[in-house]
Length: 185
Image (cartoon, rainbow, N blue to C red):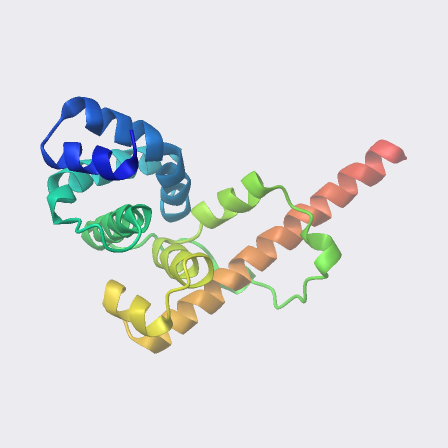
């Protein structure tokens, strides 16, 4: 069944079509959800909650623009809304530990799953700003509007997120180098 027909059936609350749509897009949307959530379980919850919203609002989709893009916006906005409703950020991360180290491009041989874990461990606002700016091409003006912060705060949060990630990547690579030296020695 083509996507347009599938969407039209979903707009008529056809459960079989909804199931098919879910299975067609769940992996793509889950990968996106992982970027915006702290962990696997939170990402799963966000995915499920987003599909509920998608099916409630699917009648609003007018077949203009990308359907996948429309669903992604719902998922991202859902993650941001949850963040806004959550209690204050956990500020236990010691920002004084952030080093101003220039990273050698050769050092960035870090597995993708490790990098994703580091992104997920960022404080909420840093993670959201980093993902919106670096991975989803939002401007600082758009981020400021979405998160109800100033553009300057968005830029500052992006800088801090990058600094934290840089420090963790360098530390990870230092550990990997030590393990290699120890296993060769």
